[in-house]
Image (tube, rainbow, N blue to C red; front, side):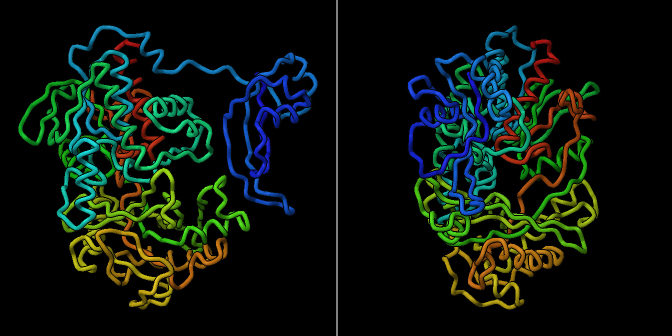
Length: 539
């Protein structure tokens, strides 16, 4: 098999890839037997008038001798032998099944980290017990829709809590930095569960909230089929610790479940659990995070800025963007986060009297509205450095946002023009804010710290210089975005994944401070499960 890298093909070229590969390798068309797309990215740089292109990494099977082809292109670094694929970790775990542990492991949380930890342990024959404070994804979806329609908030089942975790009600982006080989195993598992095949090779893969709900259910059924148990509306209230570490977990209803291994995949919004862990003496530290607002534009603006005259072409889809800015005086960074093409801004609160937002897209990304968070870095010194100081910081500004917008989970909204001038009242937006249950015209300065609003005011003109119209006066910004990542970290050993203070406790995923999105959280949960199995002598 031959691998071609950096194969640039005009996006309008609809010829079969076999024909394009044959041309690149100077072969007859019929000598190329098959092609496999390893990666595909959009290159919209259009240097010197060049067209927008798809940049491929392509594996090619041919009738020609691999040795001859490699010899012919020996000076071409973009043509090489395709690497051998490694066996899936799930295949290895299936083959390596051994006796059950004396006490079955407990996994707290069924977001990406908990899902993949439980899938690995169930595949290995450990029959894990999963405790999820929220409801199953169907009941969760219904509860969220009721909340967005103006009904009361369920503090255990919402955008933050419930089957699938916070990522289920987002864009479903699967991008992650680094090239951990376990990412491929996660992608394969998603595809087996019903995700589109294209996530295997897209440079910026996404599933979309609508499809993610089905994927999450399928993974749950696979965990159960392999011997795992999943209990919903089961909130862990306390950890019972002894001289040798974890002895049991206690649920909010009083039930005690004995175990000597807890994989803690609680997500970044389990503030009550952070408090309980802190009071139990589990080693934790404050960490940096970021807060800000959601900004919305007509999707056609972003498409036009990125794709020019080719904007709107269905082969390109809805365009995204990534923007960064650093204050020259303070060194504080501002950046776009969780950019959702063709999506909407959503109410993501998990506590009464406090408001926070997030962004979401369906698979088709066809709402006509682009949104992204604009976030400013928050350092531990900004909130006093205490372990739970970041939680208090988030709560303070979430409460302010709830209050100034008049309650009932309406969100404060302000035009970019008013925000930059320090005024309020302009409601003639270029596009209607998509947040439900509704918005109220407010000053964002009243629900964000001064260092955040000051940095945003410096960043917006810079972003406008990169995307024309980005900071147009009638662009709406909705506050506040407070849950981009965990405000603290639960300390663990680098190799064993075990808490440095509490034997038997495995802090994993975003909630533990070791991940930042669906993919990285899933990989972290998978690694924690493998570390547990290694400790048990099962691999």
